[in-house]
Length: 221
Image (cartoon, rainbow, N blue to C red; front, side):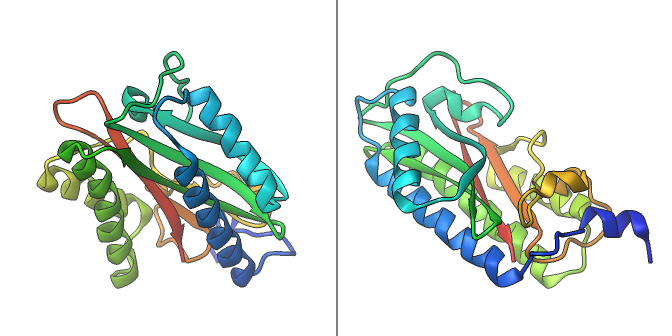
């Protein structure tokens, strides 16, 4: 057995794939509920406060990574970067939601991009992030490729589609809480084939000429 590989996919005593899938489904429920509450005229800080209240109302056990809601140009920011200012959501605008929430002791992690209004470029950008995710997920399902190869494929596909992939965002481990004790690193640096129920595939795109982007992430399961 390759102990280094095993350590990167190690789980706790309480881990169960069914619980992982339950946590992910509840997290998507929360993403959709928060998105429905986002209205033009509110600020990012107001949106985040609303999002936290939605999570509390849904009965989440705890947040395991901060809730991020990014408006406009802040959709280009990575997870570790702070938002610039406190922008107001416009009538024709783009925003994404990214959350990590514990349900039944397991880590849900999901993110998606939404638009207000009918700007066709913003709609296309949001759709492209999900489409690229689906192409890369299909590649994972259909081949035995490594995490490194998955993100190489994602990069090639993004260029073909006419978007810029942010390769500073490369996915990560999840598990029964807390996964962080395993120090697994990024999915995009994982040299083995990632198993289901353990890894989050993240896609972050930038518009090729405008100051916004899109984000989409989900569990490979």
